Image (cartoon, rainbow, N blue to C red):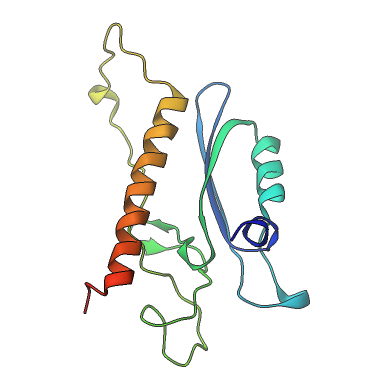
Length: 151
């Protein structure tokens, strides 16, 4: 938590928007290793990478074993969790962690786009709404974990 979260090298997932409102998603693989074998980004390097790619607004979504990315129903990264229940009990293998929140991106068909006169949807508004949904999901996950509702 705190400084350790910000300074540790770890898997990271972030979403940002450039000055033209184009969305970017950055997912960096990391590891649970220590010392010279550790890989990933700390929060400063993640921010620098977002800025380098033109982000003017961005949010860190999650990190560690929770940073999993899929495309067309296939996992396309190497998550860094190694603990049950998501991984083998031996802890020898890294895998994705079950999470309570996801960000889904879908193609939008051109004919389905209908401009609404007087409607203003800002990048900041979308990100704020995403933060609220993430917070609600996180609180729900903590409640489940604390009270063992899944057993």
